[in-house]
Every structure is written in structure tokens, then in C-alpha cells.
Length: 301
Image 1 (cartoon, helix red, strand yellow):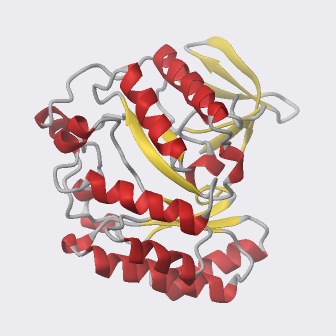
Image 2 (tube, helix red, strand yellow):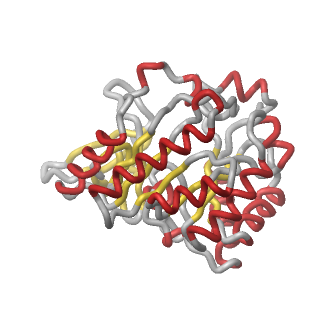
């Protein structure tokens, strides 16, 4: 479920048997949260999820992926997780949600099947066009993997408004270990093209932190992206049953970041954005608009 309190939004798994946090209802129906039995948040509200996140129809075109990024669960998910929605079905669901007043944006992501980046790019393009046909004024954000500037331009021409092309790791050395099938130089070239085609403040890129980078290396990567007109999306590493072994094999064995370290990284993120005159609030789609999973400067704090 997604919850809202103040300007913050967070998504948490629900358990009816045990958990670190407990949700309580007062007689008047208002909700509050305790943490290990102690008062934690005095007033909290449900934030209805449309498709995957509040306020957006966020669809995965295909969760399968042939690339072996160590942190990613997609290649290891059961086949049953693939809903197999067609472009027309995605457009229809988005239109229905819009008519019901549940969304203000559509977002699309996908894995790369069989290592065929071109085929996956074509699927993005056809789906963007299908959504744009029924929702001509709806903001559309996409999170593809692209390996040519031509693909980036094609996404924009098809009707995408915002794009996220992920650099993933703060340094080339870490990237080579955790994303052995990808080319960092290609990603940077595509990001540069995207900044020119989509415009400043409409291009973002994930940096996953907690992979072994130093604070100085993180700052350098943020500055590199901001200098290109790209807004970094800083995301702490999450370890789970799907990626634990692959992370270990890639040499990522350090403990997960503490809450204090996450807050410190978020404060650095905000400082770097200010230096370059950039702001997460220029986005209307995807993760920077959602804020459920990460600390987002200028929105959460």
C-alpha cells in the first residue's frame, strides 16, 4: 500500500501477522502509525495506487531481461509475473484510469529480451503511440535501455515527454562489475542526446548507491549528469531473495546503507542539484514524481 503523511509518500508491504510498523485506526476513522509499539506518525492517509504507483499508470512492457545486472530482480522473476499486456490493452487501461480521475501521467519501463535492444525500442515506440492516440495531452515518461541516439530521437518523435536512461553505478569500475553486459559509454552518449532532444529537466538517470562507491565518487557522478542537463535519481541498493547471490558474485558484500547514510546522500543530492540550477519538480512522470521508494530533493525535503 502507498501512504501519505505531510509532503512524504511511501509504499510498504502489508502483513497481517507481524511487522516493524503497525497501522491503527481511531474511532473517527483517522489513521496513525506506531514503530515497535511506540508512537511514530500521528496522522497518515492511504494514497490509492492506480497502476503500480499513486497518480500514474506505470506499466512494465516486459519484466524479463537478458542482461545480468547484479542488483536487478527482473531476470530472476517467475514467468508468471509477465502480464503480457498489448499496446492496446495498456492504452485502454490508462484511458479508463484517466476517466476515473486516478492518473495524471503514464509511465513505461521494460527489460530487454534476447539482448535485442532495437526490438525493445520498437515496442516502446508502438506503445507510446498507442497511449498518445487515446490520451493526446497526457504526460508520458519512459525508462528504456537505448544503444543509439537514433532510438532516443525516435522515442521523442513517438510522443514521449520524459525519459530515464540509467547510468546505474557511480563509477565505471563498479558499473563493469554489476552491469557486465551493458556499455557505460553508450549510456552517456544517449543521455547527452536525450538532454538535447527532450530538454533540460526532462531527462533523468538512476544512480544506485551502496554498491561500494565513496561519497566523493557519488558527488562526481551527480555533477557529471547535472552538467549534461540530466537530473540524477539517487536510489539506495535493496537486497532481496532475487538478487542476493548475484550481488555477492559481483563483489557487493558490504552492509546496506543505514538510514543516516541515505539521508546524508539525499542532502548531497539536493546540494548538487542546486549548484547546477536543477530541480526534481520539473518531472511529471516516473520515480521523481512518485517519491514512494526514495528520498527526493525538493519534494520530500
